[in-house]
Length: 228
Length: 390
Image (cartoon, rainbow over all chains, first blue to last red; front, side, top):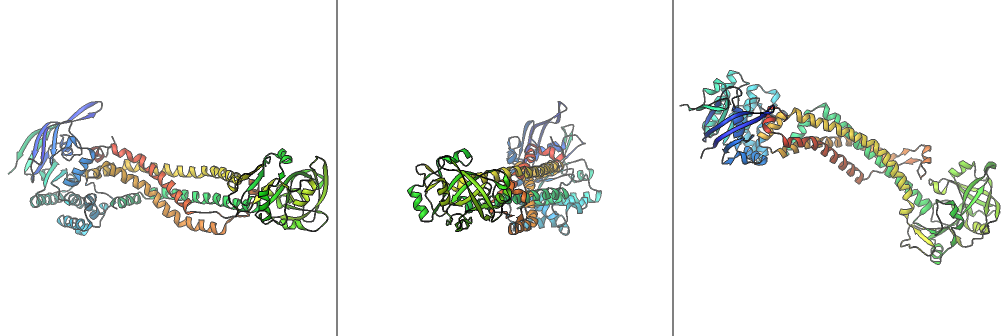
C-alpha cells in the first residue's frame, strides 16, 4: 500500500466569480522512503498538490489517501492530528515562530504532541546536532541567517521523525552554498531515517538530487520519471 | 505550559501596544476596587452610626406611625404593651414618644419633632443623660446640624409650642442642655429631644410611645397588636438605596474606562490576527487544531488582564492599603447627602470585592479577546500560509 495515493484528484478554486482549476485528474502514488520532486513553473499546481497531501486542503473531486486516511473525509481536528503525528513541513519563507529561540521552535511540534520533557529535550538536541545548529540553539529567528533559519525549519520538520516531509520551495530564498548544504542534509536524512520527502520546486540545484521527478504543467502531470 | 509561554512571548513582543493596554486595564482594576471600597465603607460607617444612635436592634412602631407623613404623628401613639414594658424594665428597650411642635429661633417659626426619651436609657449612644439635669426648666438635647440651622448654643433658651392631647396649644420654655455630635441626620435635623416623663406630662400621654427601640442583643421580635416590628434591615434600607444609587452613578465612570480598555484589546487582537496570518497557518500546519489556535489568541488577550493585575497590584495595593488605614477627609458638603457620614471615611476593601473585580475584568477581557479570535476557526490553512484572510 503506497504511503500516499492520489486518485483522479481535481482541485478548483473560485476566482472572480468563475472557477479556476489548479489540478486536473491527477493520479499519483508515493512510496515510503521516496525523495521526490514535483517540479514545474509557477502556477502549475505544485503547492496545491502538496497542500492536499499535507491535509491542509481537500480535493474538489477524486480522492487523496495519505497514511491510510482519506483526506477529503477528515475533520479539521483529524487532519490536525494526522499532521501532528506523521508529517513535517518545510516552507520557502521558513515560517519560524519569531518569539521562540531555535531550540524552542524545534521543540514546538513535540510540545503539542505532549512528549515528556526529557525525551523532548534529547530529540531537539539530536535534531539540532544533525543540522549543525547546536551553537545557535538560543538564537531567535531574527538573529539567524537565511540558511540557518531554513536548517532550523528542517530540524523542526524532522524532529518527531515523521513518515512524510513536505517541502515547498525550500531553497528558493537561499544562495547556492546554503541550498546545497540544505539539500545534502535532507538527502542524508532520507537515507538514514527512511523519511519520505516530497518537494515542490523549480530549483535546478534540488532537481539534481531527486530520485523521482514529477513534472506538472497547468495542473496536469506531464512527466513522472524515476532517476537512477 | 507551552501555550502560556507562547502567548506571553507574543504579547511581550507586541511592545508598547501591550503595555498601553495593560496600563489602562490596571487603572480599571484599581479604580473599580477603590471606588467600590469607598461606597462599601460609606455604607458600613453609615449603618454603624445609625444602629448606634437611632435604630439599635430594631424598632416597634405604633401602627399609625409613618415617618414620611408628618400628619400621622398626632395619631401615632399608644399605650406600651406589656411585652415591651417588660423589655423596657429589663433595660432591653427604650420608648420614644414623638409629637409635633414649633420653636421660635430668632423670631422665626420652625416646625420640629419633639421626641421624649428616657434620660437613663443605654440602648442608643446619644447623650440623653444630659436631660436628667435637676432644673425647673425643660432640658433639651439637639444635634449639631439643628444647632447650626437654628443658631442655638448650649445654655440658650427657646420657646416650644405644642398641642396637648385635647388639641389645645400650649408653650413652655426650654434650655439647650447639650448639643450632640451625631452623624445621623435622622435624629438631628428638626429634632428636639426632651425627657420622656416631661413630654408625657406636657401631652397627657402617660406610659404611651410612638416608637420602642429594642437593644441589639434582643432577638426573635414579632409584631404585637397595634405595634409593628421593623427589623434593622428595613430601617437601613434608605441608606442602602442612597449608597446604591451613588454607586450606580460612579459605576458609569469605570464602565467607560473598562469599555476603553476593551476597545484597545479588541483592536490589538484584530490587528494581531491580521498581522500573524502566516504564523496561524504555520501553527495549523504543525498540527495545532483550529480550536487550539483560537485558544492561544484568546489566551494572549486574556493575558493582558493578568499582566494588568500584576501592575495594578504594584501601585494599587499600597494606595488602597493606605486609604483603608488612614481614611480620607470628607468635605462638609457631604452632610447634604442625607445620611450618616463620619468626618473621615474609611474605605472597606474585602477579599470578595477584590476577587469579584478580578473576575469581572478577566471575564470581560477574555470575551473581548475571543470575539476576534473566533474568526480563526473559519480560516483556511492554505490561505493563512499565503498571508490571506479569506
